[in-house]
Length: 209
Image: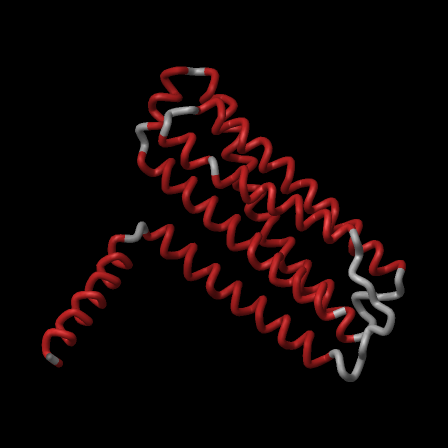
């Protein structure tokens, strides 16, 4: 009985390794990069938690604008999740439109974060002040930098789609190019991970204070 189980386990391991080997190099690089960023993010939250007993933020309330920005990001997670489906159905116009929606929502999120930072500053929580206060800026700022990187790539893709949607030949070439789908999958995965990291931070702050 032990030998068949061992063989089944080996088959499963081989299947996992085969999947990794079949990954596009760009996808593999993205996954490893996001894993590293997630670990840094979690380390920052841990460091923030350990700093609080000595420098507690008395009377601190999470800015309400962060709730708005969280809702915006969740909506953007839905709009970006539709991109691959539109691509597979050769719906270039809807692909362009939903890219535009996601781009606007991403910009709105960045604006909300800036307003939230301003509220923190008004409440007397400064970047160079108490350690726990500084961590709030650093953690949310780290997340914002990653999202900004995604927005730059999304903006490039969106303006490319504007040109493609006007030309049937370019549209045909795009929807038959497998690498275009890979880029959309990478963008979607990146966006979902960034959304998830912010949601973790938001819920942590929400239930901590």
